[in-house]
Length: 464
Image (cartoon, rainbow, N blue to C red; front, side, top):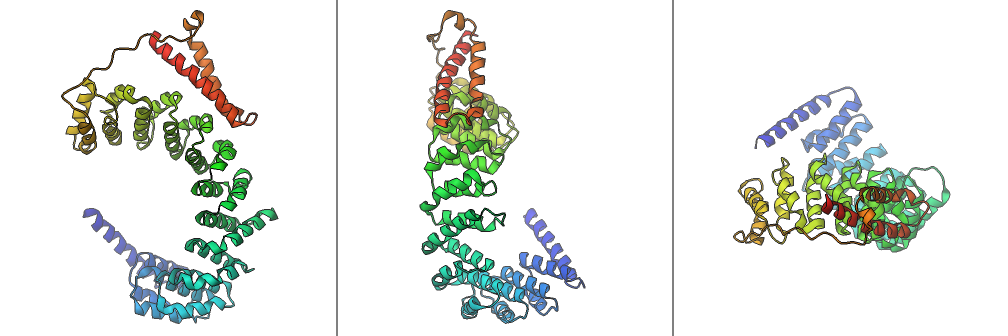
């Protein structure tokens, strides 16, 4: 309640500032005030009064703001906007048409449709988008025509409308437009190709996958949006080709690529994904955690444990706790007990949830669970674990397993740490070799190294 009152007070203060700006002699001040009043949904009558302002930019800002200031029914606002369609300033006319579309003012449909044949591209653009909002079926028959317009704004609006309406009849035209754009090899505004790619993904046009893969490989300015489109289209065939881009500097691209690898269940990418557990980007570390969990990568346990205890982001640590439990199973109990008293509330809640996944509790983990159940901040999250375990029958941790017997020569077994260090260094360097070897080969080496590393780690743990 207090926060709401504070927000209302701040809103009113800003409205008061805008009311003063409306009186300014500077048209930029009046334009800004109109825009903010619309965003604040305040006093549409003030905005309608600004439609008589002598400055076209102010009238345009007011017309645009009216579309955001109210919701229908608002007959006086619609009437004001309809009148503005005849404004001598094309920007005012376009803003009025756009606002009528935002308001989905069906009573204005005939006047808006007339604007489709206006001589000014900016007005036609607004009319296309307004029609798409108000009556999609009525604009669809003309979208192909507008897609082939030489006017940039009209072509852009038609492409966007096809995406909004998921209009499959235009998919071939949009794909050809993308191919034509890429064939020119000129430095141009990337807004259009990005829109083409987004629309093709929304239309789920599988025929676009080859060119999207080519763009993701070669076009730096477009590769991010191309990868997002491929992920959205579940283009599994792209995973093996695009996996080298996991070292790209773009955080968003790396994250999307990991998601693609998981979607395709492309485990050979694991040597390239594993190092991303130490990535500087939060979202990349989170997605890498999901990947090593999906592929049950036991070699990653130390990195996952380090994230669970030490990651600087409070929301990544709980995910690492969950991943650690999924990788270790029952052997995660000592870590869960240690983390049950963590200062991070989200970590404690994750521990409570993970205790439901283990087969049985030890006396230490039982006490940790009971403590979590008594804490009001974690009690709700401990309920599943309480229901999963019979707290009257607690079992101790099993006796240590007998000494591991592996075919390791005695002279190596006596001092295996140097060998383990070399193998770990070799595995960590695999991403650097991707330019010289295909990923399937690197994945085979990675699996072999993982087997040896896990054996030697357990051997060292038993002998020290």
